[in-house]
Length: 276
Image (tube, rainbow, N blue to C red; front, top):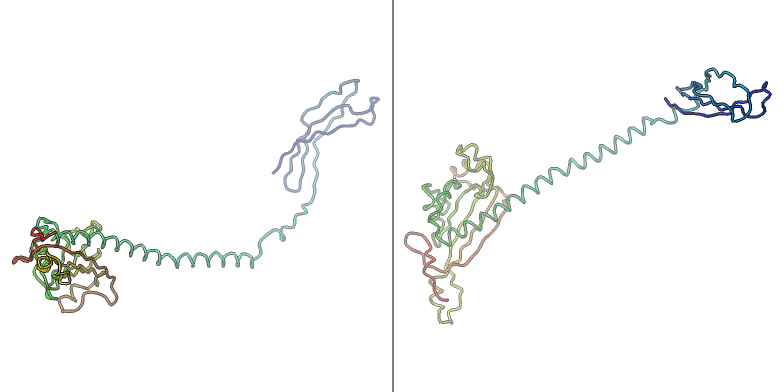
């Protein structure tokens, strides 16, 4: 519905006054094909006499000339538009799993970087006061033989033995809170990784220097190798003597050199540094 205002000059054919006698303002109301005109106000001419004729409402009918069939979408056009939208949605949906997998891998690599640096410092510094470490270790192995879990001191001692393959299956120390749950079934929902600790004497040093012999007996290489993720049924595999890792796990190696002595209790005593 559209309302417009129109001002028109009214001519009086029988009046003695020549020319325009006055102005009539009309409101024009368009409703579909019908046009309604209503006089609103009259104004007298500026000079002379004369009267204005009565202006009754007017009604005009004009058939619509719009071709509605030509202005609409055809079924073929709608089908093509839906096909284009569906193709775009399928392409976007196909990228969602790839994006979620990339996000998961980045999160796991960040966790491994944090935990690797932490465990490396624990072994190198003989940090026997890390009492909460046992809360994140689910299995402890020596030369692929499972060892009993007692406390954090025993875990650090096992991972610090020289010339032996020591391993632990752990939950992330810097991971989500679900990894700290008391219920074992709840903890299994979080990520697990296997860390293999290998400590070797660093015998490839230069013995020609004055302190070469001391370095030969007090310099060790610590190598921590992380494998993840552990198979979901790793407990059953471990009980049956099978490998707990999938066919193609991720792998990250941390290496450092420490100067110290390997004591009888299994710890590296880093306080006995040789020169320099």
